[in-house]
Image (cartoon, rainbow, N blue to C red):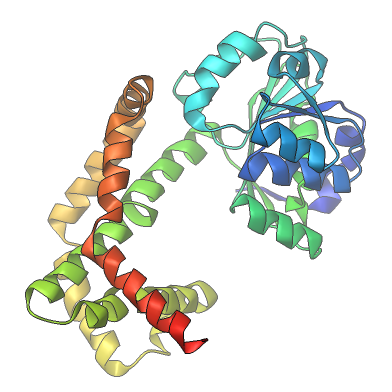
Length: 329
């Protein structure tokens, strides 16, 4: 996989462009601020009036409508939520873009699955910083950066790669490493990782382990510590040292138990389920269901969000937070 650094990127390219950032949430605000601090002098924020517009103005940016931003920009970064891309692009962006403009996406979902179909006369690039917006901003201010996945999906002008790398460097990613990939690979692996590990698999594993202990008669607070609290400690150790390096630092009891039990929990049934998840991602089944729920007003998403907050593990965590708060009184 090719990797690029600041020395491989020409910041003058993005500095010489009119850049519109559509959306001013976690990513939009961070990317606009980082670009400005990297010397991009002509930035406008395309948002509807409201809290986001007020926040952008407070940060010193000119705020315009999305349609006006699209007609003005040489480079347009679409940084709203994935489900909003379809209607926003169709109704307010596509009719106004200039031929030869460059579209920047932080995630490949809307292009990969046809929610957005850019015209053939546009450059289309993926610039996906690997981190949440506020943390990306903090690291930039500290003189550091985060890894970035980068790819050219469409090169109408012959300059898409150089301009996209310039944009990524403006975010501070060239300080760490800009890894070249494709929208397909980034999107599908991202959805799979979120669902199987980060936001689907790990929370369910933690919750089911917690409830197994509680049903067996163990105190919820003890179960919370063993199944949830200590997770961060182990993950931090794995992140710093790798799994093998982390296992050198844990007890022999924990290490031996891991070898005995890991394959019992993650066995053939789990691997078959993972393959099913990947199939749903690759064939568009997941995105179809997601957009159907969005079009209906997110009834399933909202119901599941409410149910998540009512789980016993959440109550145990709140009780222990109160215990910790009393220590400071």
